[in-house]
Image (cartoon, rainbow, N blue to C red; front, side, top):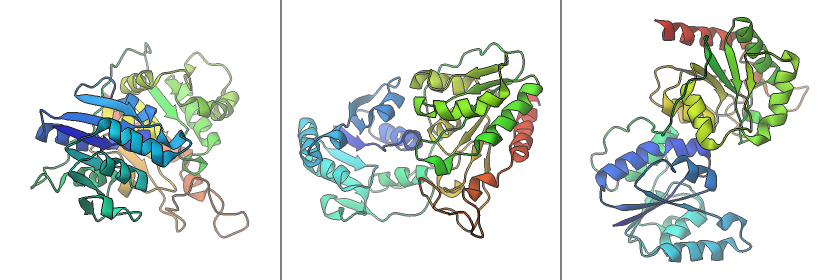
Length: 332
């Protein structure tokens, strides 16, 4: 049996799709699972067995429609196919794969391409993906925790190792204030703890802005843009605490059960909070303008609400207090 899964496009969403994959594998233990996704999402599963990983490069092709058709035909015939993205191209991929059962959400005028076009519900993203299994598995068991393969290692510090991830690939609206990260880092450096800044190469300028006021410090480690995806995962798994915006690394920490503080502003915890993670704290102010779900803050200066208020309203002291609470729990 050959099962095609068009995976999500974002790292965090790829992590949140792991309960779906675990249950799909358990229900079809002898099936050949083909995961199609951007290169970064495929890399999440390189350590896992049981999958064929194919990078979807159709978006960068001159003719995306033709590229999608060729990709589908190179995999056909499939027996079962799922679309975890909601665009038209993913539904066309399923249709052209020849799969007699094609499951996805009824969005963007693509229902005619699916055999099971489910109605989308506003729920946690994990459940949005997981519920796509409902036409095949009845009753559907409770969704399991997130799963991510890691190889934790000793960070060689006698105090606590605290990771800070100030980036967010979605856009600047999700990013907590740089000066706030500086204050939090300075506080814990003064306490004698080790600070590790993590992020993608695109976050290097931001991290430089955060760390410049801190000067040089033996316990300050800037690893931003200097790790592979697997090294990033292994580092997060080795931390005593991780502080991050709503982002891919935040969901990695949730999957790895690393004590976590997740910062939300233009998105809401209902949809993307740490999944089944008792040592996580989600900070969110629920302002009238939230959730706008915009890449950049749409609010202009001079109005009743200041620009980026949803993230500015989360104070450094709140984060420090939540961090101390989690670090204290680790000692108990």
